[in-house]
Length: 403
Image 1: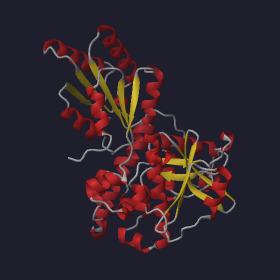
Image 2: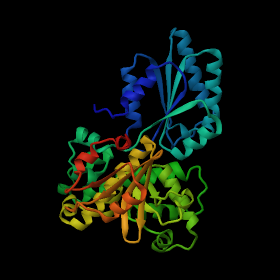
Image 3: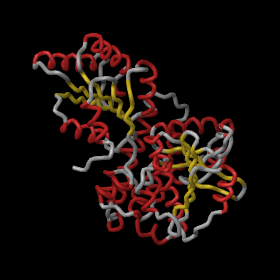
Image 4: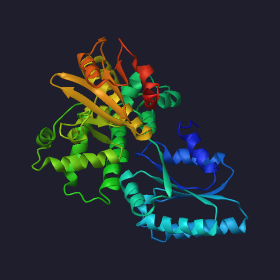
């Protein structure tokens, strides 16, 4: 079975001495459960794996009960260590306070139980971690599948990755999209909406976050997917949504969608931090399947429409970058002054990397030249047929751009 690039890290954390609670965090449908289970199978340590289904009601003492069972196994079987895993931990009410209590008890008593917590809801996970577990955990960040992972697992081409994105299950369903019946296409599109978008909004955001207008949040997801890769003001978004209200509501909803690993609202790059949110955002999906699905295009029709392919291609580059920014811990912006623009600006520490996307055979960008003169970035690139090829760019880990 294919193993994601994060697999060695998770396995290594399982084998090292007990130090901190391990939090495996990331968006839905990216393989967190599968990867942790693969690592457990290759470790010699005894373990217990608890999947906490969101549709069921769990008592607060569920965690303590499972923990006591692990302690009993250590004692009865004379084990030197034990791995305890809770998958979708956010589905237990007040989970963080119970984890803290049991972890601290083991630390005091010298009980060698290593703990791994998995969760799709970064919104709920971060809230719980901030409330009770400060200083007791470290986060293993997982994000959407990269081009190389999709290529190695599914024999993807660049064109496949641009169209299908980085959802493994969705990709396996949609790989032959251009030969599917209309019924099959509708079925697979419904999977993307139900298993990823609706699940994220309804189970990860609405379940524990006060949302005044949930219908507006859901419509915003659809609109943002369609406009991915484009700069659009919040006032224009309100108009497109035919909604009366203030832009701060939309900005708050976009922050929640970013925390959930669905959509980001990229700020305009500026040296002055106070001005970052003053300009209209550039909407960007984290996985390009979200954009192509809402465009309702076939694989073949996208390849034939060069202008549309250019916009989808730019969105794919952006999705690759924002997804990698979560694991690589760097920031992603855009830059524009008048009619001059740089598609993506990356920042990590003091280093800046500028990236312009050209799906045609242009090898020159006036906007990039002006940006280089003004900000003196560490590196700058043009991605396209006449410059750095898409496959070459997709094949690197973006964190290497800062080395």
